[in-house]
Image (tube, rainbow, N blue to C red; front, side, top):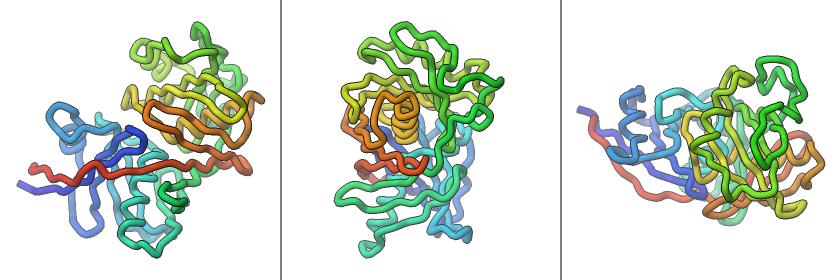
Length: 271
């Protein structure tokens, strides 16, 4: 039986179990992921993240797993949580390079918050990807009270819907249908957006492989980029979520996300 230490963290309620494998040989398999991710019998999380050593021009590398064991390419809030662990280890360090399946992400300390450059964003239909050629700014999926979807890739796929109110959207009903829609061969994350003004929006999210989450960093970036492409909001926009806000700035087709990252507790599991 192996004793595996972990850190439970969250970014605005989007929560993670983080396992540091830099100094210990830990087998992270489907059984461990499912056990730790379960909210009734484990620590509970939206994603499990491992930290590993790397030689690929980065400080560390991360792997991101959904509760079912499948991998996610990118996770903005999770990346900020990992960055906090490393910044806490070295107070003098102000910039980190974190290698993910979406590429190298740059994290910085901004006061008490952490920012992450999530890299290039695109709405090219082949890169989202979509299953067939169509206008990515007007994906023909009908949701009552919302415009047609906007397809975005920020290392992982998203579709963003803008409407007058997100108050009564039934994510449990509509989220899985859109996640698994035939237009998205790799499935997709789904965001519903209510515009407050040109620099402030409210968001609800259904994450691919995880379901309803309280926040989604890559989703917030995708939402602001989609709104910018539709001339609905400005490039520097606050994204309001249930437990606080993320601040997104789009610069040269890249998304920089800033927000809090907090440690909930440290724990261990025997498996």
